[in-house]
Length: 390
Image 1 (cartoon, rainbow, N blue to C red):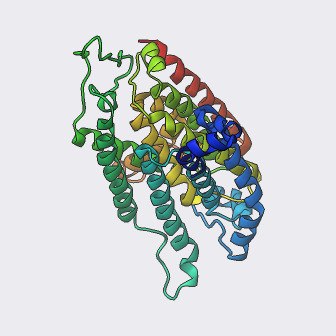
Image 2: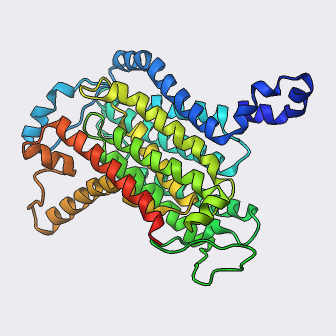
Image 3: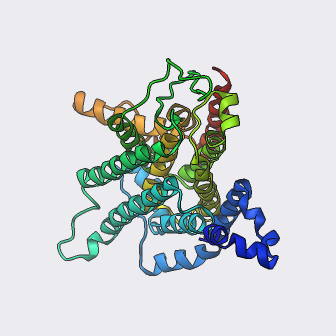
């Protein structure tokens, strides 16, 4: 709103001689920095009040596992407030609405993704946490198919409209190119089309968006099981995507690195910076011992947002490398469940997701979290470096 207000009143601000005081907001890099700082400050300032309100409402964690030793180890966390994702989503929305260009369709779809998936996660958390207080209340959250349909639905809708938004650029548009690993994915209007590039139809693009948003949403949700684990990894991945947004939206940078140039996609740097700031602020309250958990309210939309940004800037493969820990976690659950059913009761891991397997093997929680953070930072570095290997 602030940025758009300055844009609308630019002529008047110049006329009265005060434009020089706000002209720094024309710089995307400064707005991204300010958005991250503002998100961090909002979560830090609002944290105590929100945590206190959640405690008063007795919105505490009630997770149960089928491993007795794990339940015993987590007994001390039973009353830790959850649904702290409202802090993260609120800070991201406030910073984005204030500092981003709200006329940009990519920003609009990002805001929709945050609101939609945060609402789905919020309803799921609320049903779980209030089941025992409702007459005959035995329903533990949304049914799996309900949650999946809502995730797939928003991914499909955003995919269709984001594909349409890509046509606003002068053809040939790189917004629809299938960017394969190590492929030189850049073409210049003056040099003609690159015959090796594959342009995706609206169906293919929407399918990729649907899979990325839904897959990442569930991957972050499954990873969110230890104090600060999902939050810290999200900071690393969102920082990597922040850098990629600046590259994708800058034609000279995209040409230099031979990656798709997607006009106006650099505005998504505001969303990524807001995510980094909000998660860092949340980590202040979520680090061990956690005073609050994000719950599905935070995890679902964070993963969906990361997947959405990766699709728009055409860097799905690079984003998946960055998200290696998230993929390990969700992959361990898929393997465990599949093998358990196929073998009629046998297990691959002591417990899934994988961080609990390590915990049952004797690793301390803080050790697992710190090492997964380190691995994620290294994966982000490797993913960014891979842009030069083409």
